[in-house]
Image (tube, rainbow, N blue to C red; front, top):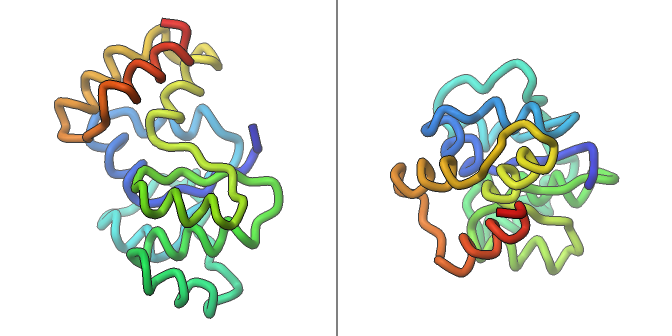
Length: 151
């Protein structure tokens, strides 16, 4: 897994809403996001999040024709960033990121990584908190996550 992770808005919002934002910080060495994501998040992000803009604004503008500004800016930044992964939960954004050959994970992937690093003993309680907060995912994704986490 790459040392640098670029995050879209949804991961910050979801983990913040369930009181687990610190898992992101503990799971990855470097967390980067964009000003657009900060704006979508709506309040200050922790000091351990690096704010960086993509250099190629034209790539971002092209992506904005299909995605929201946060997703577009995060993908544009990931395209320019060597040795990184990107956190995206939206299916359309994930498909577009795949077209650029980006390594993708999602919020549930962050939770699985936390389990594998020994930061949590089980992903089940956090998955339950995700569901309770309105984060939607299929039963198949839940079963796959539990299997990957060894539960």
